[in-house]
Image 1 (cartoon, one colour):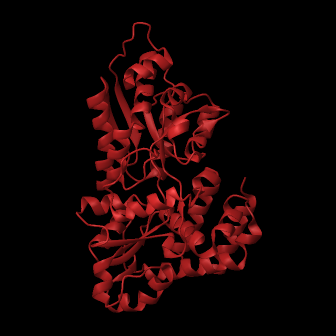
Image 2: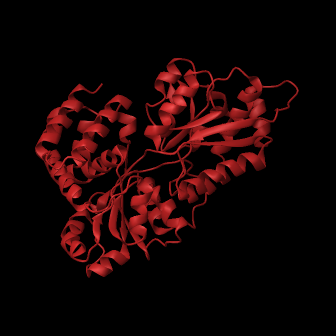
Image 3: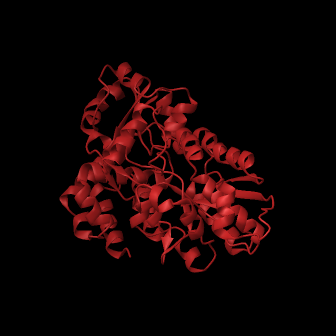
Length: 410
């Protein structure tokens, strides 16, 4: 049974069995070189394998910029055919308002409960027993990317842990190399802090803070170590003035910066630049301190339009995004892991293989987006960027404000 036939059978869209060709605007924030290469695989699949046409609705500036635009379009009665959000709670209010298309029939026809791994990704799409989004990848923040040549220039070995990296910082600075590349956007700084918290405070304390909202742990000794390390990182990034995350990645690619703490989407930039994992760059999951991935990532939601033909096309696209060939093509370009455990990834590089091994061994944690409300995340973004840009703010002051945010989190 073909994809289109299964969808028609599952949804009973048209008695005559025909699906009208639709122009489908898809909104997302994938605009860097690696991201554009990846999303083009989705567009190619829709254009070549269905009667529909992908109209690209890319919004530059990342999720913090794009999400309000997408929500405004939906609330204003001019929704796109589909839009990208992260796994988690970002779309819950839209679902509660009845503005999101129910995809449960597609999920049942395609067997998503059997193929989506880990199951928490589909759980994040589920509200009151119904499925409202199509998860497309597993992205993890838990990575540090290293320029092999930068460390060679500094005369030190490529580190295998955060501890070894900190020991190499003086040599890097002496060689005129910025130790740590960090962009100027708040989500980058807060995301980096989260990686450092898992690696340096430990998984148990990180869960106590992010899952259980334990403010006393946030005020404790383990988080004091994290805030001091974050303050050190602030100093080590001095001299590199970039805004976007991919500009920071490019500094590592060009060997002017030694390292970057960034999610595995950075691999798409290394690939576009022709860099080879293990030769030109190295990677440390969990900063080399803990063997862990958080299972964040991206999902597509489909607004209710009231148009039966568009609804049929939306459901066809939802199924297509999770098909095996599309999963391999997209995730290979994106640097992320597929949400299917039954696809062939024998040709992936050593960094992706490290991620697959951790996933296979269930060495995973939920992402912060799955545990914290959008409002709490925004407050933490604001705090971290204020701390990052205010050298006079001490680690102790930032830690207390952080604990107060966790204390009031829902």
